[in-house]
Image 1: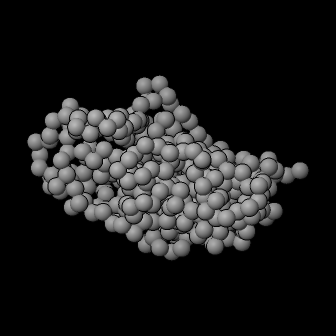
Image 2: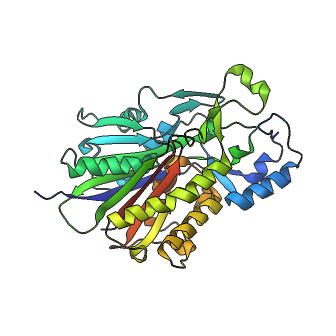
Length: 359
């Protein structure tokens, strides 16, 4: 018996309406890891930050909005964009890293699971709609897509919703200049079995490096010692180490997925890569071109949203896919037969890449 094709049957996203421009941080007190203030004034720090990351502004959730709230909004839009009844979902998978958090209290809340909370938001009564969360760093949504595909191909499911959502603004150290990278948002995608052999999932490649790379992204105390009396813990990253790791390994994972698909780089129409850092993503694409011995156009091959949406972790790829499919990302479109790649790198350190053909 042949395995069914696995296609994307619905997409939706929740891009918060609250726009936070770089100027918002002009009065912030930024500290170094050693607890000392930076010698440069904030306008210089912000100018250098924008030049490296490409970020001009980002989106934050409204006060009181949690990751599961954003995820539920994206999920409702994905269902409306599909022909799938919510009661027919076999699984809801929610990829995140910090659960639901309250404003001014970054204690992580993951019980019950965010996927179950979304099921509650959607009012699904079917007990066979199973729900679970994935903690896989920024590549969580891609890993959820891989798992959804595997469940459908083995006959365990027909419709699986995969959500990626975060409210990173609630877990950043406000005195760490890296806090300007992170943003909030959610994206939801429904993967469905299809008897049509045209299009759908083709191949994937994943890896985890957990030796010295393990804590390149981890939780830690604030750089402002006065905040640590409250026992808070915040996102901390070793930026240079992450850049070097990503540049060394992500292009190889993408090439691995392309080769497993039996394709070449010239067969790929778009690479939807996690929006972590504009310069880093461009460097990854140039490394990929080098691996294939070609001179490519990264701007056409690699859509970017980081300039205005920031790094919303697991939400960046499904949000970008939604924007493209709805014609809302200028200069980019997807057509039947296009081979695209979803690729991401993040805490773990994890990397994954998935090849998908538009039906």
